[in-house]
Amino acid sequence: CDRIGRRNLLFIVAFLIVVSAVPCFYLLSTHATPLPVFIILLIFTIIASLEQGFSYVAAAENYPLPARYTGVSFAYNTGAAIFGGTTPLICEWLIERLHSFVAPSIYIIACAMITIIIALFFMQDKHGQSLAV
Image 1 (cartoon, rainbow, N blue to C red):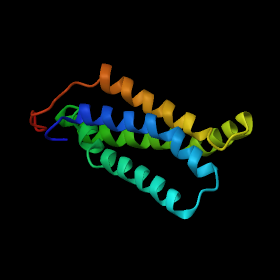
Image 2: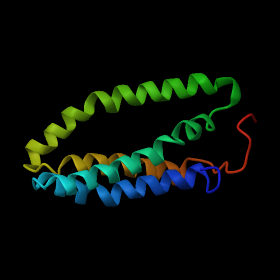
Image 3: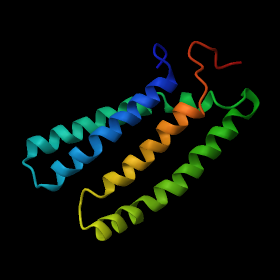
């Protein structure tokens, strides 16, 4: 992320989630043999690892230095409460409503699209700038 910028990497990771969610969920719902399941989980693990390596730095750089700790902790915990607490309910509702085990991918894609919109329109590209400023 230091080479291509956190904003760009955030966009790339969210785009990878958008294009891989439905195919991966579809393959998981077809009772595939262990090898395809392993490959799908490996894909999701790589994408998640890409995001988790820089997301906290990307969050921190969006707050001024005096409010950085408070801003990041408030945003993280509010997001965890809203999305972490409601995700199982929403996914179960989508499965029952659409009668498909691929339905949770819609929720994942929606969250990734929110990330893309934020990265494109609301994040400043601070590539190469010091975080201490």
